[in-house]
Length: 140
Image (tube, rainbow, N blue to C red; front, side, top):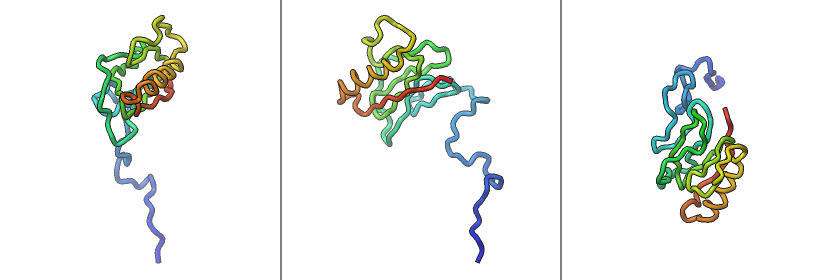
């Protein structure tokens, strides 16, 4: 009786065994904008969204809106449903309304923005935003 053969990483016949390896930061020419599918950060993290269920987002904010002024954070399409919003520390505009941060303060507003989206939109209008989730993002 012989022991089962378990392939090691060094004997892998495939150059990349991961079926969805994500972008290679050294060779990517993508702009990082959403294509209507799951949005992933391209190169540098900022605010973005990602799907979290088998249902793709079905409803989107009518106007495209950047929620920060960072040159390399170019996410501007925001779903209403079936997604998790990752809000980076540099964010200071609400993607859904113009009622948040009317003074346009740019420093230390991300936690307030996450709270605003949760309280005003998700809890305040669960029929529209009820399947959204909000999470803190990171700067890279």
